[in-house]
Length: 245
Image 1: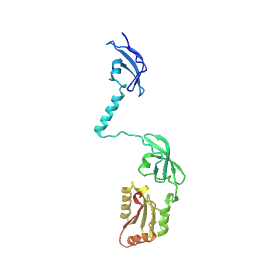
Image 2: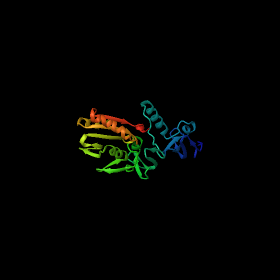
Image 3: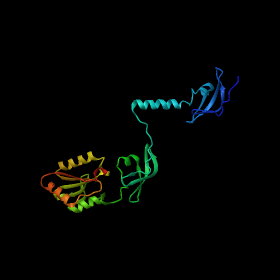
Image 4: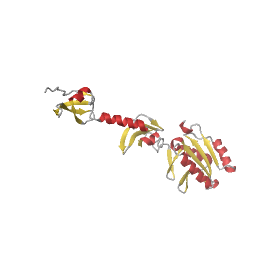
């Protein structure tokens, strides 16, 4: 029986690497290397007719795609964050993988370098190296904005109240001023609301300043403080740059 030499022929994902054997039907079979790395043996007729174009991986991929389409699931793809900016952090390069989480080398505007997890960057939980623009009072960081507000009202920074640390506090008047920066608090709105309700329940008066980096003028702060001292237990100042604008 004459056998057509198919060595080195490329058909679909398969490359014929050698003759294998004559099967029970008298057909020549060929050892083939698939693009996915598997080795398989295929009959010559199936190769020439296009019936078989892979080791089976094509069929598996088609079935998986059909299954995702039916269930509405999207395939997960690795996202390159290089060059993107998140708050004060610019992603320089991929760092490493820990479990299923990717970490990125990030350069902060202050010059510090920090490895940050991709989901923490994308949801805004981490937007700086954590040390720039901050001093520490009572073992906790204090931003320049908090310091400025404290100077306006003569308050105490990082005032300890049980497990809480109050941003700015006037203890004798039981007034608390909370500075909620968008980058740090946009995903903590429910937590911040519960914190404020807890303080109000305990007899404290609360002024909440929602901003990104802006600080209200002293007369604006004084105006709202006047309401706290007289009739209202809660006031809120929303600056133009709240929501990262």
